[in-house]
Length: 260
Length: 158
Image (cartoon, rainbow over all chains, first blue to last red):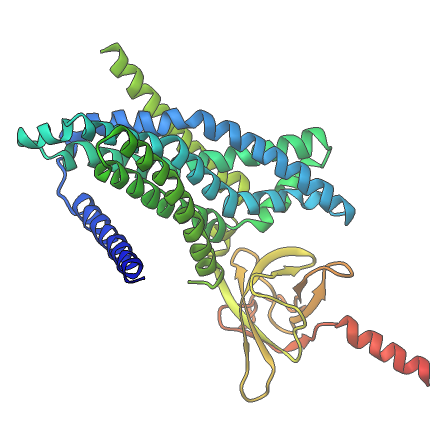
């Protein structure tokens, strides 16, 4: 019994310690004075890896999600004779919620896990340790470019997602189901405001980018340097960042609806 | 070297795609609705009952949208609702005898405010058009369906 209690306390302390460690890690990454011109090639390579290579999955899933929302929304709205309101339903649900959340989840699965595995393998093959020995700070050379690239890419990916998804819904609603194109766009423009909806979606995606990329590089940097450790860290990245994205989404939505 | 060039170009295309998407969101999806109404002036009107009117409900003249409701508060003394709205600057509305009504879009739609402009649009008048801070004196409260049904039932019983 006592043993059990002691183990529980140990687990609790370990959790708190890892939270503190990740906070200190984040502080080290954010509060540094980076030599941007020298790091630029590395950042560019990471932008390619994290952003450009994620484009395909983002565009394809955006197209299908837009089409599905268009189809579902039209079938429901049609029962009330409000089929022309499809533009409004589509744009609001995608710009406010689906765009930021689904791109962040896809980003965590596509780029976050890959970053964790890459950094973890660097650690397992002692590349990080040897960099440290040569007097090169792995924090600045390895972690920082990846962090920055993730922070830049996800908002861009989210914008691309939302735009493509709206056109996917347009394709279904206007081209296939025969809603009038004029009323589709004008209903949408009357309902969507730049400041509340589009900007809100961008703010969400920046927060999600921060959270996902933080979890990904932290898990990679602190993983147990074995094959099993890397696989566990990769799993943790996807699980934790998905949960964090959904949790933060609720908080941010509550804040935005409450008017800050 | 060739690989490096390919990476650079694809990152550049990626960034451009992002900007294009932002442009689509601004122009096509949100229709710049806020950037236009940001340049406007605020007027207010007191209503005895606003029904289901909400903040950001449209304000229209002759059915054309010219602004939106920005604030709704209860006046402490008279217990009436003070509705503040933001109107576009480029459409001047004659001030004298202007009145505001709360109407409903269709039978079950949402509420909006319709402003009936005054008749006196003499340019030489001291205060020809609505301007910032004006209060519309003549107002008509929202027509609430329950009250109408209640009255109808009452009349049928008699």
